[in-house]
Length: 234
Image 1 (tube, rainbow, N blue to C red):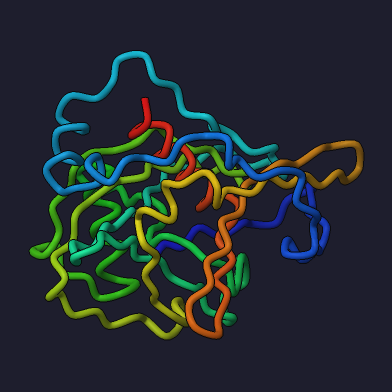
Image 2: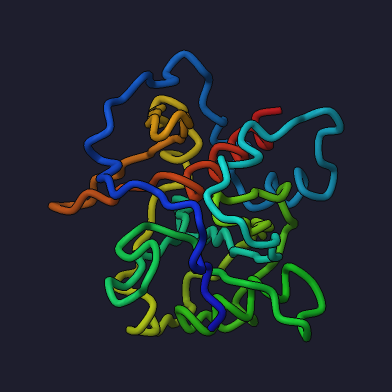
């Protein structure tokens, strides 16, 4: 597994709990993506004929790494249940970076990978045991550049619900699903900002309550989901 880790750098992020950073605003004034646009056929059609003039809202985070950029990919898996669900992971606390955070399965590209989609599929199989035969790749959203200098390709795919998953315990602490409709409703998109050493860092969060557990979706994962919203709403 080639995880998205941050090697030593002369730039260091402060240690902070993103849950404690105040909410600057909630985008409840923006319309949600209609249910008719979230069906498998509608999603296939949107990627087959994408809107010409749409723009991703979140493209690059403020850099905190001085290393060269590296290519990576994540899988944005939409599980085809009666209500479409997005599959996400909670990173293991054993990991040296971003431990405990919500993320898509994914990682750095290998030289042998034929495409970014191949990278995303390989990483998803290594991390959560998702067999590619259950996956239908729809397309790729624009690259998202993280603060740790990864150029991430978000590969959107449909996943058959009968697939069997087996998380790698060294990398994944939990696998869970969030309704696609929840993530595509800006009323659930919160804006935050944190200033440190004269640099203002801004991000979205999309906290999702499931039973007694709150899954705090934020940072790069939330940014890519926000771009997915813009893509479908354009």
